[in-house]
Length: 145
Length: 204
Image 1 (cartoon, helix red, strand yellow):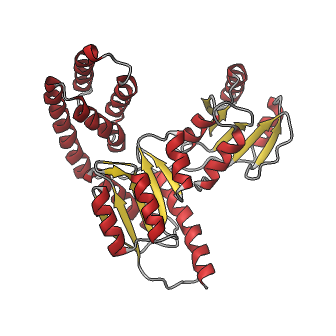
Image 2 (cartoon, rainbow over the protein chains, first blue to last red):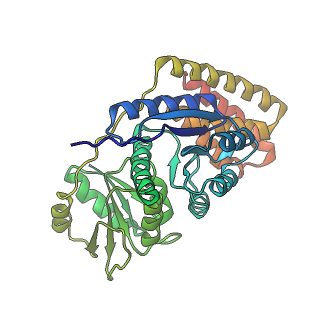
């Protein structure tokens, strides 16, 4: 039997300079939340198209889940990752990049990224991340009591 | 089932590929741990075979990196020595014996793949954007403004394949990887060639 856990609505922040990428990601997140067996599926969405607006939105909204593109027009997603983790250490940050160099992957892990998606987007990659978030958030709630 | 075979010995990889493919498996070869990590993050493999001793990044470190990033699909270690790293689903002794490998493979299942949802109006909007980008590239090439030119190429590379335009993404990827090695005097010629290739893609 499924037990219902009452949790507040969570927040997702999508950071990508290309509007179409954010739309595509949002579309597929919504689709996966409705089709797949995921525990946490009530999210409100926030978007940012560059590093400075991402920082601002992050501070205002304190999101639980972030999809963060590494290559932003006004800065590196890796720098943002550090700032996000300082502000909210339990934030689940997924790095997104067109180039998965070993340096990028290593730096992401070192700065506390929870996951790494190599573009192009596929539903399998996004779902893998959401399942991971489910496990992560369960653990987080347990530790918080 | 889709298998990723990470092994620096090309002959061993070829042998495995022959055996596995004749048994109906699809195999992609990764020649070191770095390539294995990048390939694994595409999430298109049901199972990874990981050699332990590999250049650039060894198999145990590659597995650990993937696990740190939440990769939860099965990874099988292959080694002549004992494997102490925690995180592998299975360890196979090298040299591999195909009958044993095949028997072990039956324990693993193919992971169903889900299609990306691409609403037609979003694809259409992206197509318009891509065409505008290509027009911009023509102007930037004439001005020999290579910094802005390559910034757009980079964006096309990262986005086009998500919108069902894999060929455009590949062309951009190819140009980007070659770009640094192209002498300044040859850049216009290479850029023109790239733009012609894009035109031949017939975006629709």
